Image (cartoon, rainbow, N blue to C red):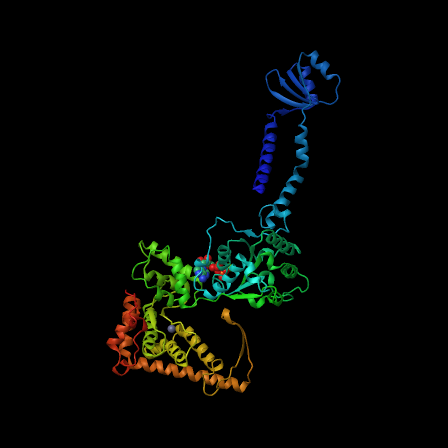
Length: 616
Ligand code: ADP
Ligand code: MG
Ligand code: ZN
């Protein structure tokens, strides 16, 4: 606001000055020398003159105008009077004092203006910040903002339960202190991005009905040393003034990073900020009714001092939702979305393993947008399918030039996956097979995994076999391979490796774990693997992994070899329809499967349960 006004004032002043300059310009006249002027006067050629100090404007008797400058010539006026020239005298004009002042100071004013302008820009431009560096930027939640309660957060029941306790602390502290217990000072919400940590913190404030200060860790990270620390102190002061209240620090890893971890050593700004935070946390008692809630998705980088009892002594893990959780989150987000009757939320929830709450919200939104774009009144299951595929694999590349040959190859590859999946007991059931390219993939077979907390060896082997189905089909039909099986191979190798080195599922290695992993378990992230075995063991491990993958490949090849007719029919259908669903797969299997294999074919779990809702 101020910046704009200042800019406009400068522009206006510049305009006025320009205008004045142009306005002052005299009409152009001929300039003559003084002696010529005297000569003209003497020969009675001059009718009138206007004298302004030393400047003389004259008019000859035939009307031409001229200018000249006179030296100190005392006799000039006498001469003019002698020759009856009309004399007009004017005072010397002077620029008004303020204009003179302005002109001499203008460059400096402009420079100062520019300096202020840039300084403000550098600081991110917000408000009068130049003078309030040390003030915290915590935003107090406005009361009339739509209140978020625990009802808005679904699928994270354990976390909710723990936080409900905090709500009770805030509502009725005396109840808990009766037996001398201390109310926790800080709660740290830990979990992958998008699982609802920020949402949960806001829900706590909404439930408890207390003031809520929300600030992000990055607000403390400033260019100037000491600013972050001052902000922390101010934040706690504000909190104490407004007790009972909740102070919420989002993304605390921005300040809470392990000290001494960064480059540049010693006393950097972040370290000072963190120290201030630690000191402040020690300095207040939760009896004052201030509870600190922080959220992070990188607990591994947090300074251990933050986590010790008396600071963030409670850690609440907010994990990725499981099947049931996804179902509940879906229910929260579809409240305002009209659904077609055929939509089966169970299928949607089952088909989205690994999705976070934010992903689920995004899924519903994308599906609603897609249905709206197609002019539908209700969101259909096809929209959810499309939205899910778009989120996980990228947009469909419908107009991409693909040769018939490539398409044929992809059809056989995907049909191979689908058939092997149907005919291998313990494999995850197929949901959909498509040869519409999407993202990096030429086509894909999507599965409907069942939620399970541990996996059996049979299941893992079945998954490797399923992955090998694509490549086996290529080899069986075309006799050569394409790069299309790259991810399949990687996937199978990964599973086999884990079977051997982590799960102890190989006979030769036995129940011994190799390759110590540093991983943040609940983040599902491998950070590094240390090789903690000898070269000989490495050779054995490699051999075992190879044995598993190769036997699975052989099995897949065998299945397809027996069922060549089925493979041809499914590829044909895929080429015709581009996308086929679980029911189609099952029908084809029923009709064309080889007798010997027919009994072994497990009917797709989805259709078996009659919960399909998956029509064309
Ligand atoms: P985080 O802070 O853990 O990264 P957010 O709380 O900011 O995640 O979640 C982002 C959005 O995702 C929320 O606004 C909400 O719409 C949706 N969301 C995430 N988790 C849940 C959940 N458990 N229940 C309902 N909605 C959720
Ligand atoms: Mg967040
Ligand atoms: Zn494949």
